[in-house]
Length: 360
Image (cartoon, rainbow, N blue to C red; front, side):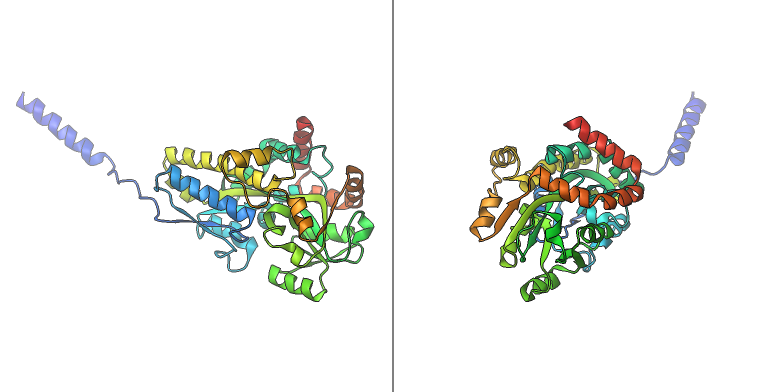
């Protein structure tokens, strides 16, 4: 009996020695950095803050995300954001597809000029892309390059403002010097319309506006133009919806894996609610009224709820193009779409066309 007990004790000791030592789970960081390119008062910045606040509240302070607006973490180089997030210098980013497109060519899909603008319902078309096969293809392309995506948001359709008169047809763009994003697809689009596109930072652009050497710029209305008080520089606004500026909520993969399964679910839920909020901010006063109703329901109405009327009150002349007028711009940029479809991937563009067609 004693020999049996001794053998059992020795076997137990051997098992304990062979078993790996279990270390306690690593504690969460005191602060997680979330990068945002524009300022805190932009719709984009407000969307990031909404996400951070939701996460902090729902996690009861376990996950503390701090928003760093105005490209504070990027040393002035917006296109470095993806690499910094992938490499762990940044934990989270609410990022534009435009700024990540140099690293992921598929993200140029939504920058195809007038690709969504000619759809019967441009918002329904964008939602179909985000939720459909083409949206998944874009997310897969990002994740293969090393960043985890937990949700979408939206900065809005990019509209045109100028100091040189209203824009209603492609010929009106001829010779205008337009400040644009430095991505090649933007440069090619404006050249196809006869304009002179120039890439410059915002402070240089505003100086150019004041001196009369830069004639216009393109940005989302609710998200950027109204917060920046674009009427201080330009009298004319053209609602042409030439491209949209989707936003992606990205997380460093190592940071993502550090969260418990329960907290990962919490973050995904918060990202989903943030998508609704960000879309509503960008679409407020431009859709069928659903954005207004939603923002009222969560008690998050911004000061400006009627963007067109508000811009006119500031002295701007607002031109809202008809489908027939937009079709002329679509025709004028056909070669740009064809060239970039080959670069982005015909399969992705076809998937987006199928997603949009299914949503009509």
